[in-house]
Structure formats: structure tokens, C-alpha cells
Length: 472
Image (tube, rainbow, N blue to C red; front, side, top):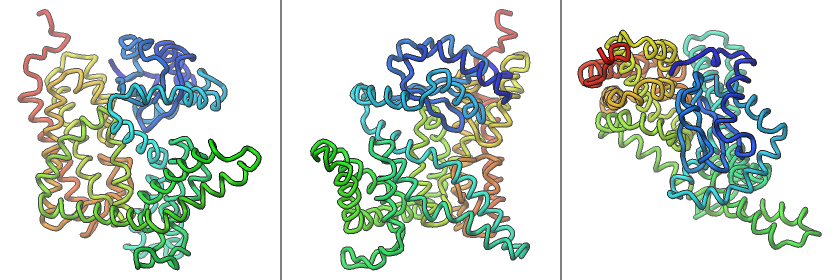
């Protein structure tokens, strides 16, 4: 398997990839929903038994597949997923409304078939936050640039404007979370946004809950998520009981009023306590058990990526960014990608007669250096078996390196989520000088590369013969 010209970015190649995938997943009638993340085409399927798994994985543009309780995911790689998805949607149906309708009809049946309700809930919460990642990345990059300009004293007339542009989204992120929550859980998105907007409205400072005045933004994204979720259930309750003649007036009013009061007099306070606990726990974990915590987080992140569960961590990242200005978890987790790169490099060196595999590595390595691990996972390490485990060992070593410095009081964080690897450097932040923060992060990457390479070279390829040498 190798990356092909189908990932080159031309509309024709994207259409060709979409056209090749569609019949192998059961055709248009079997597709109930279409979405994508940074690297994957995410499909809702009526009957997964209709998927031709072998033929699908054999497509040059397909790096792998992941099946979970809520979606069937086809790994296409960074950029390719975003280009292929609209072409696929056009082939399936010219109407997004039809897709949504078919998805809604089979939604309950899929949930009933799910063996792990907790896993389904985590994925649905992740679906609330995944669409926000591009804005988080863009604003994080601008915040990093603005911080650099401020430190250097350059362009003083421009930095206030950059501050406003970079900060506006984070100031109102609760509204977007509310909108996506209602959409994901079957409510009216604008009503979810209206309820969540209560969390960031400046006037909440005049409201007292549990004997303490509220603060605008208290509870953050978790409060917005809870408020919009409650609003969705209130709306559904009203739709089934309010007479049709007054539904258009009464249901929206109750959907905003009841959750709004609950948010002000309960949810904001409770979510604020949870958010504070997350920040305190993250700080304590790294300051007291940093090396061990980094080892565990860096070592286990690749399996989470493989299963698609890494998206469930987004609310934690968002909460830490709201509280502290950066998330200390992302740099630790990013070390998993470093271990993967080191492992792939060892495979490239050891299996030098395997032309096909080396071509895959050369194509996928640039994305791996930028922190996009799926091409290397599904194209290299996972099919070979042991290199996947040695890649995890590299990630664990890199995580332990960064965590060790956290124990010394040097925290490394990221102002946005999404990128990792070398792409994370512009988003780095911490409690020390930026140069020291970047040096610690770079040291972690180099440690992950080295341990991933050495572990794979020494132990990860035992018994694996290059395809060019098999049968000799």
C-alpha cells in the first residue's frame, strides 16, 4: 500500500478517489451520513456487512480503515480527507438534507446496536468539538504570532488588532459549543447557541448562585455543553407535548428559559468546579508524577489514535486552554507521533529491499513529522505488528522526557489543539521563556525519534523479512 496521486490535491483525483470508494462501502443507498476530520472520511452506514474491506484497503489512496460504534472511518491522510469528502457527498446525494434525514432515521438503530454506550457518548461529545479545531488552530497561530511581536516590541500599532482577532473566538467559544451540541444531539442548533450564550454574557456577574456572584465564562465549554444538552432535552420534551398552534412560540421560549435558569443557578457553578478540578489535577499530575504521567500518556496515545478515541480528549484541552492559556497535555501526547516517526525510519533502514514499503514511508514521513500519524500507523507500523509497539515505546520515552521537566517546574503547553510534531512549535507556551519551552519540547521529540528508532531497529523487525527477500 502506498500513497498515490489521488492525494495530490487536484479535483479530478479527489473525484476519482471518491468514486472508487463509494461502491466498496455499499453504494449511495448504504450511506447515511458523511463527514470528515483532519485525516479521515467518516461515514454512517446502514449495513456494514456491505463494505468490501479487502478491496477498500487495496485502494492506493486509502491508508486504513477504522470501524467504531458510531461511524466507519476511512483514513485518507491530511488534506486528502477534506478534498475527497465534498466529492463523495456529491456522488452520494446532491442534498445534505437527504443525508441528514437518512442518518436520523437510522440513528436510534445504530445506538441500540452499540455495545458500549459510554464509548458512543464520548464520540458524540467529540463530534461537538471536532468542527471547532480549524478555528482553534487559526486563532492559536495568530495568538502565537502576536505574542512574538509583543515580546520583540514590533508593530505596536498592529498587535491590539491581532489580539482582538486571536481572542474573539475563544471569548465566544461557548456559543459555538452550544450550537454544535444541539445539532449533534438532535435539537435546534440556534437554540443550543442561545442557551450556551448565557455562560459568556457579561450580565451574569449580577446573578448570585450558592451565595457567590457568577463570573462571565464560569464553567467554560463544559458549562456550555451541559446547558445546550439540557436545552435539547427540554426542546424534545416540548415538541411532543405543546399544542401545534403555539409550538412555534412556546417551545423556543421554554427551551431557552428553563435551561437558562438551570445554567445560571446550577450548571455554571458545577461546571466551574469541574473545570477548576481539571486544571488543578493536570497541574498536580505533572508537578508530582510528571515523568511517569508523560510515559503513560505518550505511550498510550497511538492506540487511542488508532481507535479514533483521541478526539474525546478535546474538551479537556479546551478547558485547560480557557483556564491556563494553554494545554499541558497536548505536548505530552504529541510525543507518540515522534515515536512513530522513529519507528518508520528504522523500518526504512532495515527493510531496504522492500520498495513498496519504503515508498509508503517516504510519502507519509513528512505528514508524520508534522504530527499526523495515521498514514504511518495504517501504512507501516500497524500492518507489521511489532513496530507499532516499539513506536509506542518511543512515544513513552518522549513523554517521560517532557514530563520530567514538568516535575522541575518547567511546564510545556500548547495554545491550540490540532497540530503536533514540528507544527506545534508556533503554538508552544508555558511558564518559562519561550526558548526554554521550545528546547524542552524539541528534546522530547528527539528522544521519541531516537528511542522509537532504536527499539524498532533492535526488536521491532525480528522475523519480518522484506517482501523483496521473501522466499529466498
